[in-house]
Image (cartoon, rainbow, N blue to C red):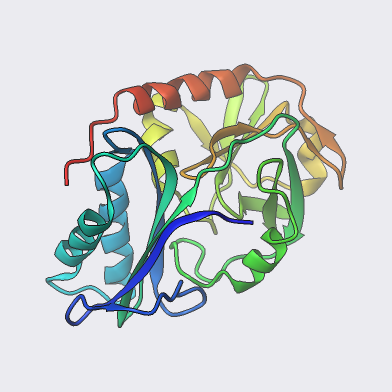
Length: 257
């Protein structure tokens, strides 16, 4: 059961509050950010907002007031005095801006990935067409598992994160047909050389590590995949990428409302 701190929706035309609508499966986009601490910090906040506006422009849903109104709604709903460890979701379609805060789940050891033959609609963008994915995620415990999305026997991304693969001290990322998330893009340069490569299910056994990188989960080492069976052989690059991530968390500036 997801624990929400708040769920609110506003009309875009006048920023009047209306009955909450999560906007899932509507024609629009969203972003999810980690807000933590007291006073609060939001990891990669500016990049999240900039990416959200960029996607809105692609879907022709942006106007001159959109960014200002999104920032205003966030400001209205955050407290300087509350200690946070939540995921802040902002979703936008042509009529509504919705905001929600849910508790961030702690990831447990022996994390597993379940493969699903499915590619998101327009996967290069963080759009709201998530109905099928949410149905499958609802059957899993998010603290110990996630879904790996595949098409044509190639692994593209997880339902919540980007995926990196490690073999022979080299880091690989799928070539295309996935969304490059804000957290991944923020860490990419510091990670160093990431080789673009089609990751075929039949070749999974050749990889030493599988690592998830996303705003909700942070950096997670996949322990195993049940079908087809794969088990991690090392945690070397998980520790390396985790260190980069934790440096970003430590250096994250305060959110000023």
